[in-house]
Length: 501
Image (tube, rainbow, N blue to C red; front, top):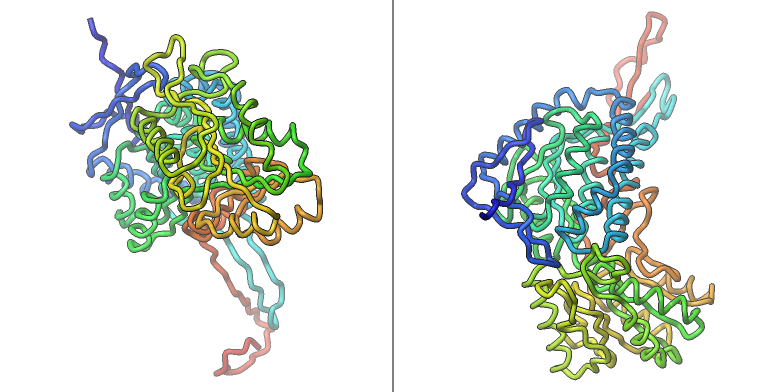
């Protein structure tokens, strides 16, 4: 007897409801191909209902005291901590990353929730006293209304937590569209958010693909959209939602270069690069997928290969696993196709991770650590984001040449420099045209005290998600200039100028 996979519900106006759609998609365990659940592709009417609920809830939520909002997120962070293991196991089952990495995924989102709990300090306005005689000017940061978030498969806990906590803490209501490939951990986080006290209608969830994304971009009652995902989809979202008059922030594709100078600590650098290139099977937008070896460091290739060979490829639940599966069969086929193109275009395949033997997970979407040397900038493996456990190695004579190489790449998400020289590090951080820079740190994603600051082709929109910038993104600054008269105030007479007197 076949047991039907559970159907994932939507959240509309405080109720978990089953979609009336006829279009359902399987959520697949990438290590086993087991069907875990079915996710609906919501109807236009269901998206409209979610937005209508959020619009109605905004009327009261925007008036909710800031301390009340903050305390919900204090409770929420506690609940996430208490359920960390459960969340990690759900995440690993549907996304594939190892359990320790899945806990890291949840934890980096938890940090944003903690930041949201400090909203009282973050949403302060400013006041200038006596800007003219008896005149004060002050600013207030008010919520926008209904906001929406579209999240990717690779961080199904962290990135939703980048979005809705800060949006809601600032007084907005929210429509979340998680990745249709792995929405289960997101939905568990949503359940915990309701348990923490988020009122009905303040947070809503719809599922789906392109049609739902377009409906979010077009809906006149949605004021702002946050997106993380591919460059192709992000550009579409930015253009379409901007034309519809919305604020938009889109974090998109990357080709993150790590530059290694010969004076770098060799063992630390090799460890960092292997972890950053192959962790999460390379499915991080901040993965260090491109290595530039400078000068004598060009002789480190074989050491890197030997280090990569020590990584264990297996299911994410198996203890000691370093590299889990990629998200889908089509993702694996694409990665393998790009590896083949690298060989065809003349790159030197020094470690081939295709078709690894993974005992107990023979049906899994596995690609082992793969390394190319002798890569040039005209090759597909350099020009395209591979999004798999593939590291491409280029060479440079000098730091200046390496900086020029990084800056000529259109993407500007993240970069790193490995060196023991403070002077080299300072020159690198000054001259590099990339939003997030690591010095001996391979994945320089900032903690939420700061903001995610990808740049150039990796980002559309002025303000980043989470941190200080996102408070500006989710609020409208209103500036008030006020003068109060009493009976003793002397008349200034009629003023036909624009000067305050």
